[in-house]
Image 1 (cartoon, rainbow, N blue to C red):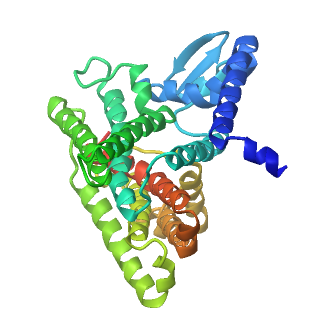
Image 2 (cartoon, helix red, strand yellow):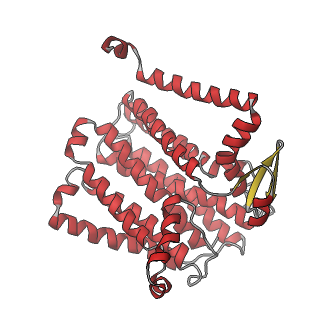
Length: 377
């Protein structure tokens, strides 16, 4: 058994598994289009992207090889075929989690083959790319909001590159290009550390994306700018993360011993997500924002369940989504505690990769939520 494991190249095995799964899905879609493609791939993955990328569509319905869009919930429920609505379902959420784990294994196998530095500097150099992913998603939100005839609109299906799950691949390849380019420059002696050009690439693509959003504010009346949203979101996350860090350092410093200030960034990123959700879902009318609904399973459950168990007057005062901040904070602190010094000593590459992923899970959607609310779309 040991001899067999020694003969198997993990990287080639990963590629073989990825190829086998892709082949099965392609053949299944070709041989059983109604069941495999329409009933599974389209219903849970491509259909929500199509619905999300179509202005005014409550859902997209696939029936007899054709896609029809409906603008009301009643029409969606009465339509024959497979209906897909914007956002995530339990099936897609679980599947994306599995794909994420599989992709992480692939990235880990890749960086093992590279001359990679697993120091905190690499983590910090990747932070702009997490912001970039959230901001890039808002580009598509703006495109849908302004309509297809606007000069800032990105036509479908090109906008699908900015919609989940395809946006993850877009951001991944941009980030991978920055990593490979930085390593190449470092090996040639152009720079001393590859993190410098890597961070520069992240800063450039993030700045370009934010500049495009600023242009959209000037180019159309549909997109506005509400300064109170980033002020409360980023300011509140900074204050709460800082206070949490001080308490941990004072009473339980062992929690931060493994991650150092990377843990502070993790906590801050998840608080951005939590506060942005509370502002959008509970205080939208007070901030002059459009009506938002939860798109994720966890915050959707909290948003709908909390008003049932807390007094009505409390819900009217602070809303029903506030426990999401507590959940995000507790989860982030728990992750920071789990990543102790032993994990970094035994497997620094794996630990760094997971930390970046944990940050992306919080700061990625959080940056999208607060930017979208900032623009009022």
